[in-house]
Image 1 (tube, helix red, strand yellow):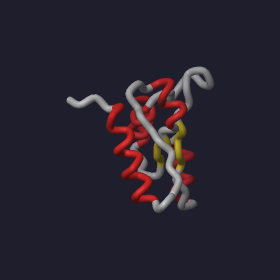
Image 2 (tube, rainbow, N blue to C red):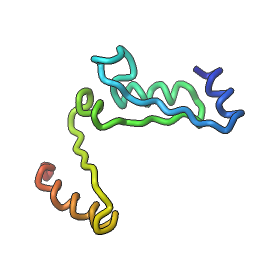
Image 3 (cartoon, one colour):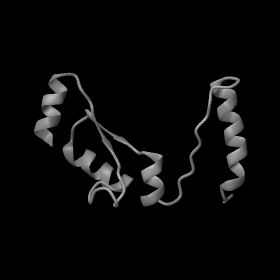
Image 4 (spheres, one colour):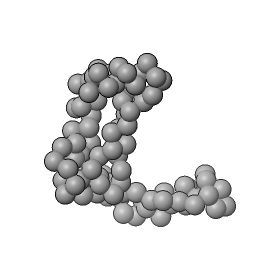
Length: 91
């Protein structure tokens, strides 16, 4: 992988690893595995894309929301946060 990352860096390209659940592949199934691979590479042009669909299968404890920009992004995000707070344990 380091050889690919070196080549990509010369081209000005970042590589992104998308986590996929265990039903699709048998490695890089959770955030911990993804972070280990990134750290092991010791490169700065590799990133992790934690896909909420796959994370919900492998990493327990995630809560997500998709919002539309109505009336605007900030207002929609604040309204979503207010709504979701009731699902987050206080502690």
